[in-house]
Length: 137
Image: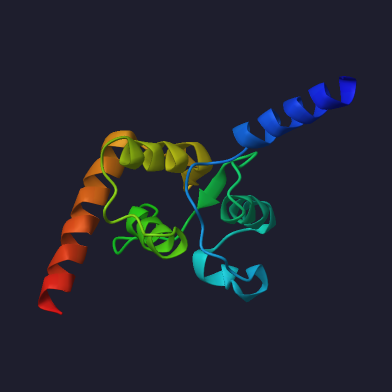
């Protein structure tokens, strides 16, 4: 009976350690971390995300935008659009809010917390740009 209780509790723990997005299989040794400027600790945490797990400490994302004065939300959207099964372009409602929550709890932008309103605006702009590009193609 004790073993059953331990097994049940360990399964519960594993479920709370996971995010709700399915990640495409990817060979972690082929990831070019130098393109997304992640230090050693951030790499480890990013790999946790790719395994479907939550981070233990926030990843400091530093890839700059065109003006070079802040980190680039759009780059995160491109990454997760490629990494998540089904992408992120069609996220809506609770699923989109869950994605935003995952970003806010998993990432810092140049050591600053991600602001939800900025995230929403950036995502909307990015999504509109994607739709324009798709309609042109």
